[in-house]
Image 1: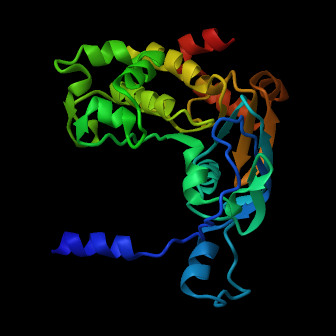
Image 2 (image 1 turned 90 degrees about the horizontal axis):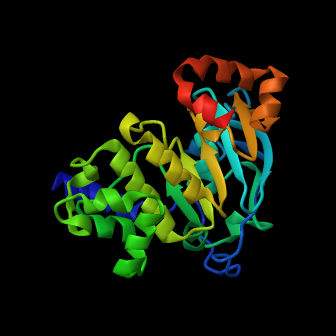
Length: 296
């Protein structure tokens, strides 16, 4: 009864962001350009607006998580977000998914403000690979397919593209192998490959990677990096990265510091600048040996 009460409370909770019901046009098969234009965001301000309208006191300082953030990710490019914990990296992903709306500025996809797009339409454009991968209790094919109307052949093709097919066929029931909740019966690296296959199957033009390779088994690391290369090809990608070696080939790297873009440029440009990024890179250099040689 207690669990049921919590479920129904959740179902009855109103949306925290308004949902537009009018479509702005099909973008599914088009390349997407993401733009943040002077975006400011604070979680505490969102909390006050929700629970105490007009109750904010001028004496209460606003803790801005993002402060005037602006950038553009063009079709087919990979833009990486790096910085210390709490710098605002995951908040950018949350705003793109419209879990929240910014208090100032705007976010656009192909010039369209995402606040004017139906939530379902917006999120259908996005393939989201999280650090904490959730696999449902069910077989592997269902976990790759999710709500997409895909044939068995398309599911296999998606898995093959990211190198997961060989691993899946090694299971006793192959694609019919039933997983425990959260994929407890397989390794972290295997779960990661399945999440990549899921993103490929969704065929979304925008890819969000939130620390997607931070907990990879060393034994499957090379396969993960090869799969990642396939996954980002031809897609606009925004990658939140803790391990800098995984994003050294990004088209643009933004270094966030206390909610602001402190530095931006390619890996080579930022290393030569000898600023905050170079410091982060040097701190991680001892942990990234073989990868450093690969990315130069």
